[in-house]
Length: 330
Image (cartoon, rainbow, N blue to C red; front, side, top):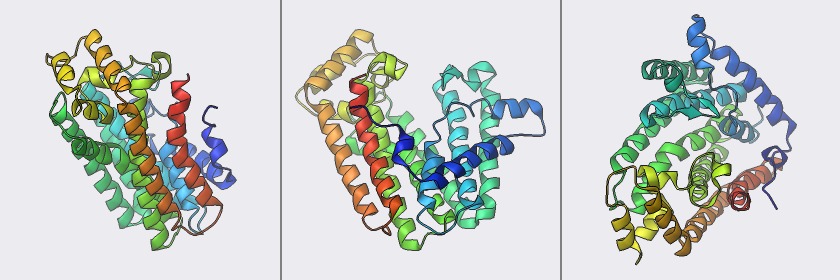
């Protein structure tokens, strides 16, 4: 059975009403005085899943406040996400994003960097009425995103890195913004301190699972599902948890021989490494780690005030693991 549509997991109409307001506000706050900058800033507005602002709206249900504050929290985290994508595409020399040509490829790296900076500045502007704690949270989160990116660049192609290095990257580069989305949403909804901390812990664990499952999909899904060749991470020298576990196993010697040359690695070498990882049980081991993280997220949910929203948190966490099974059958 395929993973259900994410809307089915959140049967709270207020969440989706506010998310529609987030969409409208994104159009407003990405409009600049200069029409050209507006065009660049809005280039990737269409096609995003809005997972992070949706989490902010769910977390806001932990408190009594509806209305504009949770909406602004959702807008702010999505702007940070969008701005980071512009910068990531420059770093990766990406040609496309969300099914369209990337900003850097369509215009220039300079334009992409400046537009990314504009979006990040707008995020701070939107968050300012929510208070200094909200602005500080976004600033700390973006600093972590940068630290994670720098660490990943340092580790690229390093066959001696450890799983701890991998978790250091994904906790900063991916989990930090998902954690911030949940925390800021809870704050904007007026949740009490204990509920805010529970949402934060949940967001951290689910953020790790979000990346873990993506990394498993890169090894198990079809090229049609991924929209890129299977094993692209390995080919680029980005070694995820299944790969690192395989390196530490008896198969590590062969993997080192296969990937001993310069990047990008030959396709036949990458395919053989994928075969080793799959046959050695390393994908299953990574999914077991995801299950442990989901259990930790569930423990955080257990400390939240009882109500409809706690079931939503549980289902959203489980969805991330379930989608791997759906993709493997795609």
